[in-house]
Image 1 (cartoon, each protein chain N blue to C red):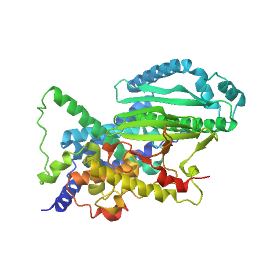
Image 2: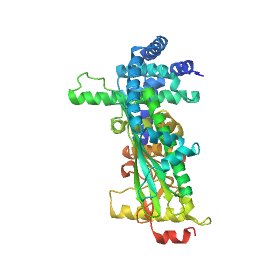
Image 3: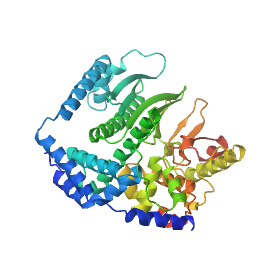
Image 4: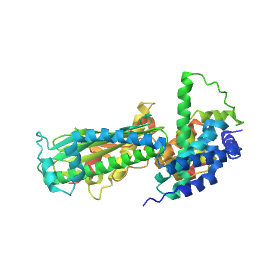
Length: 162
Length: 307
């Protein structure tokens, strides 16, 4: 039987569109690219709705699609930049705190993703593992590594990581 | 403003980020486009993908022809058809008790090079000893089940057209002595970052048994603590002599420290018969340390061993 989750995914997309946009924006830092990523992610989610096995995870599944799309977009852009200088003058983003923000941007995309999901989205570590389809210990070590690089205190994490 | 306050500020900015009206429109364009293509049944995209799949399948069939006999045996041998099992064991082997054939289990490479998988697994065959043969069958079945699981995961990633995903499974016989045989299955997954996983299968050639770590020790022996403590000492020592080496020990947060090995922690016995405890990437050290190994000395083990 091929019970498709298409309708469910569509609902989830519409309910979460702001979150999905913010997540995409956190990678590309400009509106046009973020909009493209939202469109492409929605397209892929519906197109491949049958690959969502557990409807319960529709939310994290959508996050994963956006994350994968964003990271592969960044990679393509980086390849292009090495060929010709990027002249499209993307709009400067508006984070006011350059210090930590720059450090965050210098992290490897997956490491940064863990920080964004943990602190900005307020996810628990097991949800992050679920979203990224990684095991808990990998997520933990990514988080530690990132916090160290960002020179952030880990005290608050103590309770969470136990 | 300290770092923690900066983080709170970034969080606030993230969550208060203005989302343009167009975001919902873009989302709905994506949804509509996908729905139309689905209804049209065979979109140009799908057709392309189908062709690609067909090509992939032909390639696979070619490989399967080469290894046809062994693949078949690999899939059927355990407990199902003793005749085939016998036939395989009858393949002439050299003086060694355990022999192995490479199975090109799976190979796929997407046209855009975003997805590539190469899965090579061994099929073990044993001669003579019935216990050894059944242990070998057990290991073969586990290896196949593992490879199938990884392949399925790979196919899902490809289906979903997410980010770059690579899968590479290889194997290696690390020990083949008079009394011991240790098979390593090495998995490298490339998912934006990449992670290495290693499995070992151990055969005691003398008893013919497929051995897990716990099997080595007396039932009442607290080998977990003894070995774990020894590993902690080794970690400390290695970090002292080489500043480039880092293990999860004396971490800022105590709960991040390596605590103890699992009851059936990955291990193998090396060619010299020494016990080697193995950890996966990230398990007890940062990723750049790879899969750390620790040889456990006889002094630690002697009082704990079975028999």
